[in-house]
Image (cartoon, rainbow, N blue to C red):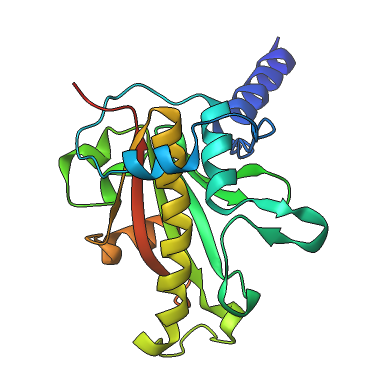
Length: 216
């Protein structure tokens, strides 16, 4: 009996005290066909600040991320948005109710960084905490030879701001085509968000972008 109790205790310890493996998400292949004509999408592109709390499907998230910063010429590792000097230094983080993820374009999957819901830290507006999806654009300055502890100057980030603009516009256009709404936000509490994301000192938050269904 004592031996059985010992075994049960060990099993309970295993269940409750050993950390669970991060739950990465392999996204379905993006749907690259269909959608509205480009001129109509440009006419319907807009920013919105009222969002439904309805979750997006994995297919929608897949399409959004591929449109934003996916590989459209994978054999050449070229993407849907241009990148100055092809540095591709922008990383797209995905804040969902289930946690924080990093979009890995080469495998078209989400790598879980944390199981904490940090959507409320991605902006100062109330809607960011309940909108289903917030994208966080981060410049990895290591790709520009900036090491941890180096001073990051505004001039160092010039191309990163431009590159993020291209990516976020792709999201806007996809949303206009798919019946979703979005808004890019520069007012981000970076001093709180960066540590919550576990960023290094040479990773710089550029902008954040909310995506979802329009609110009533």
